[in-house]
Image (cartoon, rainbow, N blue to C red; front, top):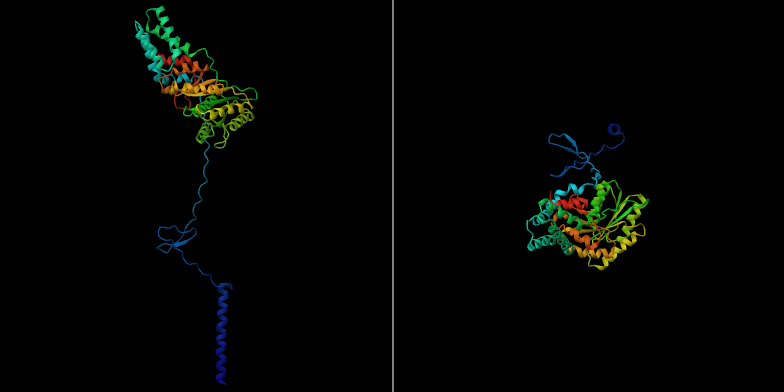
Length: 391
């Protein structure tokens, strides 16, 4: 009996102990098992700890690694629109630059004409000087004949008289009375249209951009047509010129139809009621018949929408007489109305102005006198001749 009671007592004690343990467990954990802490993740040497990782340093202090910063949004910088200076007076401001390149030509002629006695050898030198400056054979002969006649009448000459005589003859040959007006005035609701043509390397696209600057400086609004679709860089270059002065640029896909781009540019100009649309065409090799025919097509397509007021032929003054054949072929394809002579400050062959005008029967309207954005100037014969002869 005593043994039986002892067993019962042991069972009761075990049951009480078990009940107490369960009670304590539920009281501490609210009926849930205690949380298991995640194992500590340490970065390898040279690595950055993942965001939110809790690390311990040597002093057992905990450090929370901040999440990486979000990359900054790209900042789109809108190019500042420039306000170009007006075109009036540009050639006067650039006269010194022109005089530096042409001084050999003008001063050489003055020195020869100022001699006390002009024999046949002296006249041969005068003729050679004119031919070297690319004045051309016919204009040179006309000038020399007139000068010889006038010298015989005058007899002895002072340097001032020789200068006046030469200045008069140069202005006659350059054509001081030619109409050099650039026709860029809109016609009611229709903008003026300028077509820029020329061979590769003459500075055609640059001249187009500079002309846009000049017109905007004079208060006109401009749309540029990037019809040189065969050279991607040409459209990008024109876009840069347009962005700088706030001119819209109409482009097409690379290798696309140039005539379509030209048509769209004129349509945009009419829609937006701008003053001038300038269309830059692909640089044509004058020996490539297909390309020249395409240029004619561009002009015809534009004329379905508007009249082409100006066709400017861009010529490189440094090519001299080699540019004459180019000019003649272009004149056969499109009706050239004016010439833009580039790089005139880089050559002593300023006589090309005389010969190209005589061959084409159209005036030089613009001259490039440097690489600066505002170095394209309306051609002024008197300023040009005075720069040749010096003060």
